[in-house]
Image (cartoon, rainbow, N blue to C red):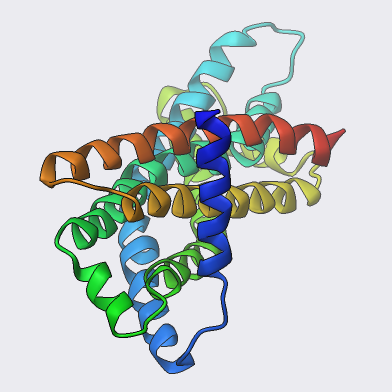
Length: 246
């Protein structure tokens, strides 16, 4: 019963979040701030993880197809499909769950325990919409760019690692990247990341918004937000893969 109670509470919060904004100009400014915090500030960690991710995938693929009957361009093909289909959406989402998810939960949770949210409610402000909606909009807008960045950097990192390790030539790697390319795979990955960041933002905001107690409870809410977000990312990864690729 506790599960259904929290699910109902979550959707009631979303109903308040997507209420009509009082002042669009204020929400616009807040959204720009969140794009900076959630999107631009996350580019560095996404790029670093992606380049090493691409390198590892390329080297592992090369050592797993050590067969003279298999052409080496399959290394580029395997790296491309692995990065585009799975790693650049799911792994990036898990990174964002830890980075922006904990930040959102702790930020809103601190405002709750210090009674700043109560002050907003007293002033007649829809605190749920004011605090959470700009975060959702910013994450949904910028997440596809992070995924595309991850794809480009990951494939480039795979090429650099393949050349450095001597397991594939540039010509074969590029041919493998281009071979039988399906543009829909990029659309599929973008759809997944949009769903994932929506889950991260709303779940983290939910735990932060309903925090009660003191600083210790803020930390607990932040931890719960990251764990729950990661679980739902993996769950919806299976669901979306079945729906979009079947």
